[in-house]
Length: 424
Ligand SMILES: Cc1cc2nc3c(=O)[nH]c(=O)nc-3n(C[C@H](O)[C@H](O)[C@H](O)COP(=O)(O)OP(=O)(O)OC[C@H]3O[C@@H](n4cnc5c(N)ncnc54)[C@H](O)[C@@H]3O)c2cc1C
Image 1 (cartoon, rainbow, N blue to C red):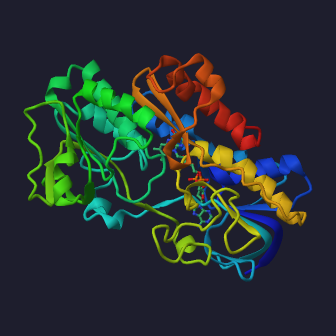
Image 2 (tube, protein in one colour; image 1 turned 90 degrees about the vertical axis):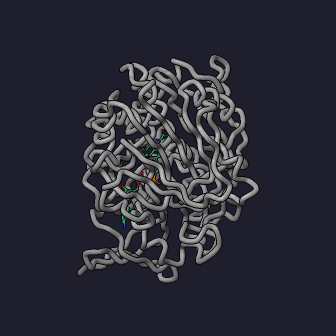
Image 3 (tube, helix red, strand yellow; image 1 turned 45 degrees about the vertical axis):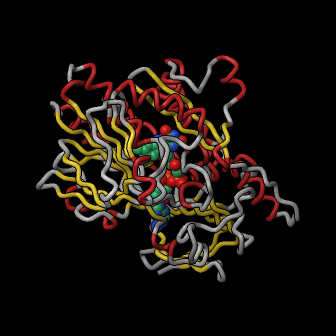
């Protein structure tokens, strides 16, 4: 067992951890920074949507972790098992211990399969697939599908990239169309929310996409159980009885609305794609860094503009683990990282004023078919926040081929070559 000390410790060498470490080193190469992460591989998860639709090579989404750790940053290849912010102390799973002066947490989310009965047993089998878990299997399932019920859904917990469950649905619908299966496929999207997308400008376009593919949309559906043997998926209706009529949207008049007495719905599936339930990692949930109760219970308690912890001034949080009222995406991390870096340096130099510079920016590249994409950019309160330069050339509320090219080629290039190197 050993005890080491570092000036700055970052937990998680994913999108947030590596970006912040790289930016800090660019600001001051003498900083003593340690990144803690047990993973061998760093993934560009955003491209898994395209892998699931057979239009991106999975191998290009993965790089050895060692190759993305910024030069001069000490990599501790271990998992954190607990931490005590009162003592600036981190316990590692191996028994080793680490002390810090300043801490940045960005360990992402974990998948909590047990929140849905039967999910653990059937995930990645029996045509139950998820781009979150194994996008290569999604592609296998898609190619095997010869007609029947294709159900797409998402857990009722917060999830990373909230648009991902519907992006693969649109791609699947387009795939069925290309292969002459449109008439044989019933595509259903039961979701826990009450709208297809929170920002009205983009929702309007997405509803047209839903109509184009003849998708049956269902709102207020909480995923509760998967019965792989019977090929059935169960949902609980969370709407008040008076709202039941609003639970359902389909242009096809042959599809019947829900019976108001129904509180549980069972759908048959031939293929099922889902986003699994997600929570903060256990060591975060059990630490004093997390909200102990309330709607943000378990997520890291940071100021939503400065990203400084609300109780521990030497701690910052960013990425999926942070309790921020915006979408959990890598694009959000890109705008959070410079704010964390600037404010951490302020704290280190004992400057009182922090920059409240993060306004909830997030972005969702909503792929709506092969060669089509809507670039949804927004900030807190679901206010549209489209990039001014891009908007000069493209109406990003509409589907476009240029945005598809950005998703398929531009963003992966930017991620590996600029963002992870602290330059974007
Ligand atoms: C299918 C899918 C599609 C997506 N599409 C998009 C998209 O189009 N655009 C977009 O911007 N974003 C997208 N995202 C979301 C994006 O990938 C995440 O929001 C982003 O990676 C969050 O960064 P992070 O640093 O918070 O977490 P991550 O990048 O997930 O990194 C977390 C790191 O913490 C490490 N860790 C976990 N537990 C511990 C521990 N106990 N000790 C030490 N280390 C630990 C992990 O090993 C991991 O390396 C998508 C994600 C998925 C799954």
